[in-house]
Image (tube, rainbow, N blue to C red; front, side):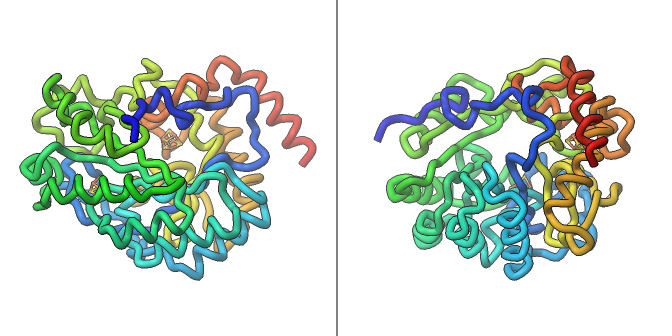
Length: 345
Ligand code: SF4
Ligand code: SF4
């Protein structure tokens, strides 16, 4: 098979200009946190890392399957089909014992155009890979954390067999059918040309899309001993240079954890030891969450994020935004659109 293309060449990087289409009738992406536990202890992780650990309060370990199917049914009834359902969050999604069933449920009910799992990939056995591929998974996004077993020990505090890991990823890729595989590493783990070459030599023949992303200090809690601090908090995709005033993330997505709490983003959820969720699905349906809770949050956000407790000091909008997401220059017109919509009730 051909070598992987870069993220910027891939369909994944193509976005609509958000300022032209907000307020959205339905979110582009709904994110699920299906596991609050992880098999790694990455030095940069605000929850499981060795630095100041955030405590993910109250949360049960795994999203319950029955609750999950109710959420998917609610999404289906509310919106028909959304662009993407994304498994991500406070832990490793592949640890959830029902992850394959969850993906299959979305796929069978045609509730999302794309079903994505973000994983560290260490739990992929050939058997699990076969099941994930058969379940209807669209995109496996693998975060690689080093180029050797020693690197993994250093960056993730975990013993592993790097050769076996690469072999397992190769198995997934060779049997993947229509599932796409995206592999990325953070720039500080491959900071010499030689290391970058080693990364591309090792992985570009076993994935569809490959990328070296800028490191981001998630939650401001990473422990980065060997890194020039000026390298932290740049845009992950090198797309924009400075922090936007309006965070665009809650304009196209929201986040559900295993307690059915709703957050505007995973950054908000990561800080849930400090901040309350916006809503809980036990009190409200998905449609009302989007049309009321999220729309209220978006409306306030048009005036700029510094006034939100949630958003003070958060630089996630710089980290994740692409040029097409920026709303600052169109804020007046966007506000008028929201005013009209809110007047209609
Ligand atoms: S794999 Fe992800 S969730 Fe797990 S420790 Fe690393 S950064 Fe945290
Ligand atoms: S600024 Fe940060 S905390 Fe606020 S909505 Fe955006 S990503 Fe979430």
